[in-house]
Amino acid sequence: MSGITASVVLYKTSATQLGRLYECLSRSSRRPHLYIIDNSPEPTRLPFAMTPWITYLHSEINLGYGAGHNVALRRVLGSSELHFVVNPDTFFGTAELEKMVDFMAQHPDVGMSGPQMLDTQHQIARSTMRFPTVWNTLSRALALDSLFKSSNFFEGHLMLDFNHSVTTDVDVLAGWFWLVRRTALDKVGPLDEEFFMYGEDIDWCYRFRKSGERVVFFAGTKAIHIGGASSSVAPVRFSVEKQRANWQVFRKHFGFAKRLGLLLTEILHNATRAIGYGILYAVKQSDRQASLLKYQRSVACLGWLLRAGV
Image (cartoon, rainbow, N blue to C red):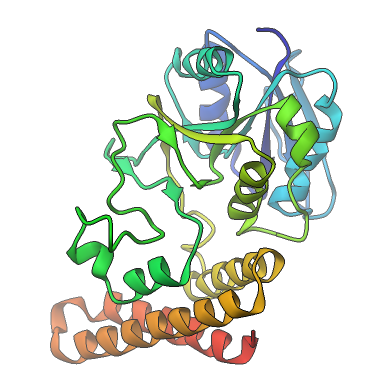
């Protein structure tokens, strides 16, 4: 299969970190043409920027995640059969891209696929979600999905019950590493640029599924994702931003009644977490810093939800 491209969006990303992704791509048996969209205030000095299979574009303003990738997506429409959307803190072996490409070639009805995510300790990490419903968000709010992981009845939207060894259709693939088919992209359209940093993965997967395109978790390949670099700088603010983005998805795709139910379950979720972490802070001296941070995140999200309205 010819015409394979990829895009990565930078914002104050170190050349060293991106260099690890560059090495993975350069050694790959199915190397794509890579578009680097740099949203940093100043151009990032990359020693490999002039490589023939790389196109480097400095945007001069921070376009956001979705709009950054859209710069590349609009350039490859009509020329690329498959396009990788990848985060700069993602690393993989030499054969992993080829496995993903072959999977898409063998399954022409799949519009989007994503690999198994590993953390830095090479442990399987969560990379799929269910579309939110009042029931699965309530199960998460009351931790029923954690208490009854093997129960289909209490399955939560975070899919804590998911079997990562099985290739299967899912509602949402987290937006760290996607492979999308151009014909599906023609039908679905690019990423929604109203989503700046979070929520675009839920929105795009929702639109893929609504357009009749399969969204598939492919267990036959894996990659390491570091994650958390941005949110670790200001975890409370980024938790609120994630909450805000999720609510943006709800308002875009769901009616009033469902939004009201989701609002109430999200309020319950954050209220119970705030109470729980507050108690832990008071009684567990050894873990006070972590409890305080989680308490602050829950209170901040709760405050935002109470002001958001349906």
